[in-house]
View 1 (cartoon, rainbow, N blue to C red):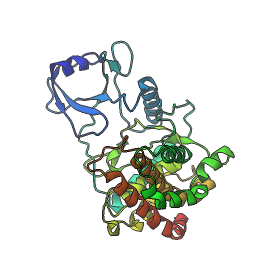
View 2: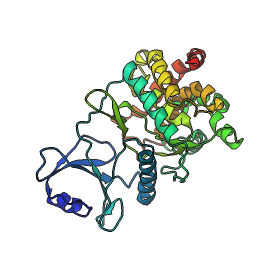
View 3: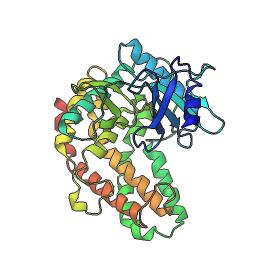
View 4: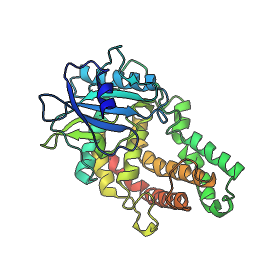
Length: 349
């Protein structure tokens, strides 16, 4: 760990580093707890930025700094990143990119997706969007076309045209069902081009475990800000429900396990509408059920394109894994589609 201690020393801290230990099991970035002399708890968090995914590190950290500075001006707690001796908010060691932030003491995260935590998540992420609605500094699109369904459908069409793995014939049913709904599911992009739907500052990775809580269960702050960028509010709303309201697994081979949990939907929607009160446009609010359908639809498209391409993007555990994922996501979409009329009734909260 001597090298990590040396990396920490590149940032402007007056403490003497005693030890650096691995922290958590992050899927994207490597994270470490930094202990300093005189403290028995971590003082800082060191993180390696995965520049294979976030290729423009300057844009990434510029986005995060603009967002956290704005939240602090609003009197909200947020992550605090330290600068290097050179005045940058990250350090490049010649191969890897690193950042250092204050450790938030006595904070905890939750993994459980319950109606209670779904309500809290809805309200917290709604407030996050609302607080950033008057941010007048532009943010970069850190992952271009991340939630652009027209782009994802083009990727699917390209995969079908190439048919690299010779799999198109066996998935024709799903292709037909997907393209049958193309007009309905590309609504957001059309509304944007017509000037009716704005892009907002969104988190774009809304999960219960992306919130820090204190020991009394109060939300301290939103974390994992790497994907914060301009998007439709549908991103934060629909992406949460895609995972939280699914009664089965994302790759569940038993489709009978999969349903769309309306109790989670109701709780999250109630919180989200409270958090965004006075902020959402009518066209955004009335199309929230569309967002709940959009994300399982989009993920079906992405899994299916990868299967047709021969599994070049998502890691797989067995040859049919992406096909199983496709079927599971499509079942979730179908269940959500069945409940769309019921979802619309909930918007009167």
